[in-house]
Image 1 (cartoon, rainbow, N blue to C red):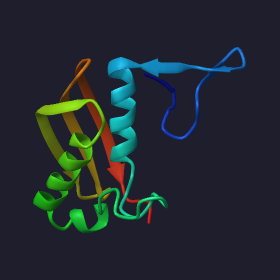
Image 2 (image 1 turned 45 degrees about the vertical axis):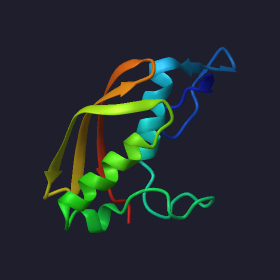
Image 3 (image 1 turned 60 degrees about the horizontal axis):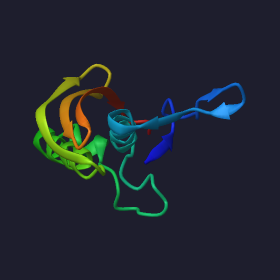
Image 4 (image 1 turned 60 degrees about the vertical axis):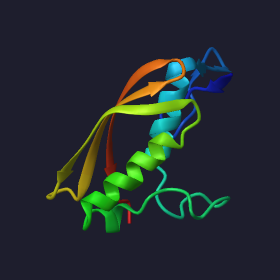
Length: 116
């Protein structure tokens, strides 16, 4: 299956046409989208996402929620490696994950910061 390539907030174009992404890169894009979905952001499913603000007070809860977000992405099989790094000054978390997908292994590095 093919998806439209995105940089997280904008679709990518070339010569006036959408760029496509498939396989492991498609799964990576879906993981990044899932990691940037905060609790109640998605109007079609208000239970989707994780609560970064409360998670910063309870890192084990945040880790569980972020792992769940990744593992719920279609075509993800397992997490091979996973690490969170907290930045107290910025009130942000950096996620490092090595993910086994149906198409191969993908590495994801994503900074998460509460926008509220």
